[in-house]
Image (cartoon, rainbow, N blue to C red; front, side, top):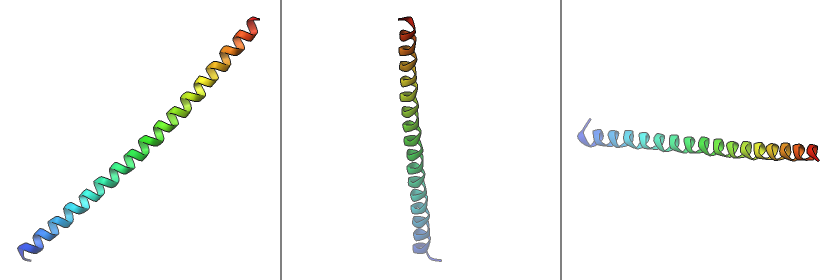
Length: 62
């Protein structure tokens, strides 16, 4: 195996690592996005429930 082949092998290895890291970052970003969307949805639901509860309490007072 010549030096040129060694460099080519190393370049291919580095390229593969970079592609794996890039895919890992994309996967992590997708997970974070999904989690943020779910938290936003949960917060809206919680806020709506709180508002409904408050309305109910006010209606009970009158």
